[in-house]
Length: 108
Image (cartoon, rainbow, N blue to C red; front, side):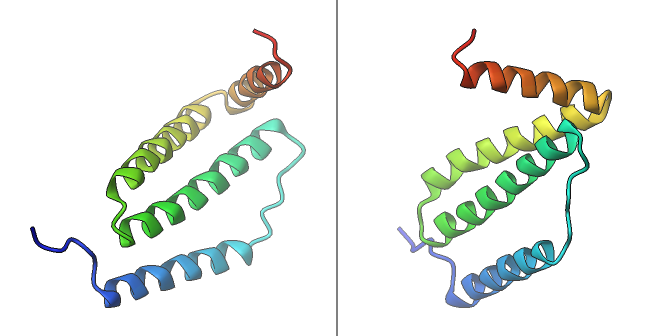
């Protein structure tokens, strides 16, 4: 079977894109307002960026099965963000925060 590893040139360009994206985002002053919604949405965005970087590294090293699992997680995060921002953002983020808080305290 043919080697499915991406070429070194491709890996370098993906690595450069990841560095450029992280530099761009780190240069932004994304300070959440004092609402639960901003904190939750920025946390989900941050998690999806880190997951995407991990997926790229896994794929570039030939670990496609592990990357597939993380892709599903990343899609679930994006769907969650879409649901939260579709309507009643503050209310939905507050409800999610309540559920997460209850789970952390062993309630439910």
